[in-house]
Image (tube, rainbow, N blue to C red):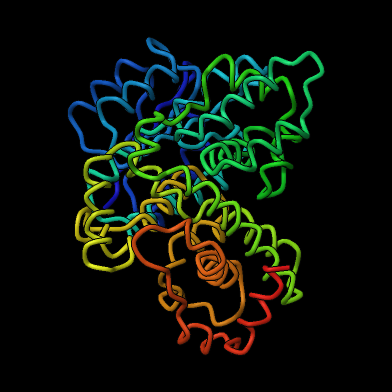
Length: 394
């Protein structure tokens, strides 16, 4: 049974929130606490899977409570309830929680907790889950980071140019989509395009995120060169573009094409997590793949007990990105494990990943990635691969 710690504000715990979270139909137990110091004492005594915290609590701010939780109890999923409305107030709490929701959205919040708990099926390795839970951001390509900083400080700053830079970087794209898809920012629909996300957040919030709380960082150049990470950016952007082309070739809804594009950009984001946080082990996986002539995700399983697809999907799910993107990232090497029998974003990304490696073999070091013909037979599109290759070449 999962355990949730619910921390109320100075006036106690909202009855509607209490009712929503404490319903016996949920597969979790809830402990109710009022005040930050009491919450810390409870955390030291108990074993919790998630903490739901009001932003304004007595004794210790909600931000500080979640930051202490992040540092000392990284296995706990962190959720913030907030009434903050000003840009400054919003910026203060961005880095403390995995996901943030306004107080008037209890039903949605319950579904988000349920979805977060379901992520455990993606990743079994406790230490990796703790590592991912502590992450605030992922490093970006230095040249893109520099371009973004220069653009932000330009008097005639352009949201279009900012969005263009962010959309070329998997780490920036993931973080900006985490924020824009939180109802906390008041956007009622799911947003899957980084350029659109940037425009919706606006210049003031974007500038504050970058300059005030350092929401983006850059890869160490030595790590970039040693692990060959720089080629990952080219591969990710090509895969996203190809996935969107393939989706449009199949005349699917434009929403699926957008999922395919963003999922393609983010499909290898788990590699960034592993390379940045466990570079020695990641380098070992690269060596194993090259030495044995196997695909990197297979070598990763030898070293980590899991692979970058599951690591990336766990991170994106924890950050609240749309489910079609999370599923596509999770299964892009093993699409047959996904129960869907029709063409979707996963189909486009799995195929685009294969085609990208065929068209740009320099973007892959150990071994070319294969395509699962059994999966294409399952969705009845085996005869479409040549058409997709031609479209991507064009």
